[in-house]
Image 1 (cartoon, rainbow, N blue to C red):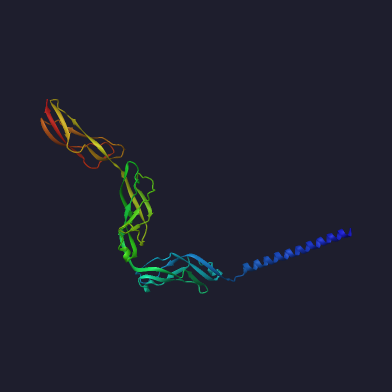
Image 2 (image 1 turned 90 degrees about the vertical axis):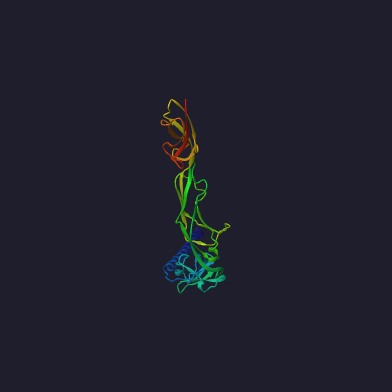
Amino acid sequence: MMKLLRKKVMILLLSLMASIVLCAYVYANVAALSTTQSNPASVIMTKDVVNVPVKIKDTSNAKYVSGMPETVTVHLTGPRNLLSQLTEQTLTVETTDLSDVSNGKRTIHFTVVGLPTSVTGAVTPTTTEVNVQNLATSEVAVQAIAPEGLAAEGYRVGNVTASPEKVVLSGSSDTIAKVDSVTAAIPSNVQSQSQTYTQSNVTVVVKDAVGNLLDVKVSRKVSVSAQIVLAEVKAPIVASLINKQDAYNYNIALQTPTETPVVNTSGGTPVLTALVDVSALSEGTHELTVPILTPYGVTLSQIRELKVIVDVIKK
């Protein structure tokens, strides 16, 4: 009995000691966390910021650089509170001032500027090799292009235009001199259209005389509009004699083509008619010009009159 009692007391004492230790541990961690959260001090740390844009510095505004990386990485060291505010949007990395750099292949340095006094920064890569040339600009017209198959069946592509009609090209003077074509095309995967179609944000493509792309900067993208109009069809022309006289027989021949291009809003191929009034014709050969009659929805795109020769023969 005594042994059992002693065993229970021992278990209770061990449980009490374990509870005291656990409470002390939890209290210590909560106190430490509270102290950390309320501590206003900023510790020194490091941070890498990637994809920081490079700004080309050229106080002369007369240089063009090719081979420049678009972004770099900046390694920062400083107070945590400051580093948390520095991102690829807030950092500025500049090149060597190109106004002091002669033309040709040159090695230029990158520098991170505008940092707080307590923050230091290093750029990776620190240098790069570029090609420095004299800057040239040229305002050129854009040739707008529509792909085959843009017009639906029964339609055709009319005028194709770019807006704006001109863009400004910037590049080295040697490259600008090679510009042969400046085009903007509606993508070939656009579905067939039955009305005017406009594609916005079209990239302008610049090539030399043999079709090579050129390293130039284009001032902006453009919109390309393609006018979609009804396609022309060739319609046959039939001449009909009216007001014949019983005393004569008539033979008729067409001098002008027997068909002409037309636009038909109703679809299909219409038949055109030219009415030849022979009521006033006497025996003999007569050359007449008569208007071509058009059905509703049909527009003549070329000839509007028909020349005929009528032979009047007495019975």
